[in-house]
Every structure is written in structure tokens, then in C-alpha cells.
Image (cartoon, rainbow, N blue to C red; front, side):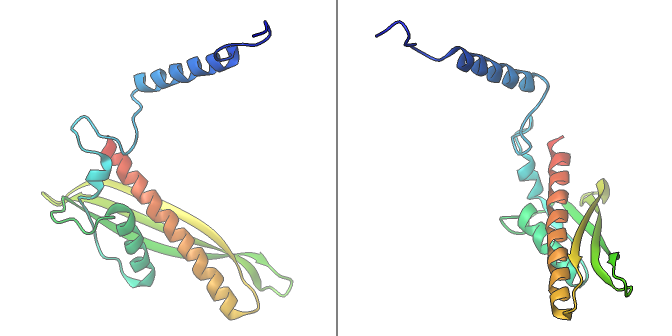
Length: 176
């Protein structure tokens, strides 16, 4: 072996290892813990989410949001003995953005807002409320069918975003 060869990790490699260990210890010291990790009581926020029943929502858009929430909050099916009920109130607005010279819109924003309440079934106590918003744009073209499909896709994207945001907010509530 020549004098130029090194044995073991390089100096920058050691430094990175030490920094990674120190940052892990610092995160642990400040109370950081994974969102879906077990709490001091032994239940994870994922387990608590499975105790939430989702109330039915009116119209087709509401049904789609209900199904997305069930997939995210109750992936194993409806809870046998729910402890909470989630009620969601959905509103939709469309706003024209780009106006052509003949005063027709060529682009629009679809805004979906979901206000929600989490109520403990025992005692009917509201324990958590929130508001989630999603804005998605779509093109308005000469073809009515193409515009319809574009608007439908924007609505589906917005509903996925709302369902994910609601799930994260509930998981954060249960992690406290």
C-alpha cells in the first residue's frame, strides 16, 4: 500500500456523519416525532383517524369528496364503533380569468372551499374545525365537450387536494 492511499472514511465523510447524528439528536430534543408515529398513550394518529365517521355530502361533487376522504381516513372501511363524526360543507366558485377581444373567457379558475367540523359523538362536542381551499385553472375552448372535460379534471384535482389537506389537519390534531 502506498502512502497516498487512505484507509477508512474520508474526512468530509466523517464530518457528514457527525452532522447527521447531531441533527437527529437535535430534532429528538425539540420534541419532533413522526406524524403517524405512536403517541405517549400508545395510539398513532393513523389509529385515531380510523375512529372518524364521515357524514354524507350532497350532490355529485360532495359524493366524490366523501369517497376520497373515506379512502384517506378510513382505508380499512367504515369504523365499527366511531368516536367522531366529520361534517364537511363544500362550496364552489368559478372565476373567468383571461378575456379575449370578443369578451369571451379563455381561462377560468375553479375554487373549492371545504369548511369542516370534527365532533365527538359522545356529548356532541365540536373538538376541531377547519377550512381548506383549492384553486385549479382550466382552459375554455371552442369545443364545449373539451371545456367540460377540462373543468371536470380541475374539479377532481381540487377535490384530491382538499381531501389530503383535511386528512393532514385531522392527523395533526390527533397527534397533539
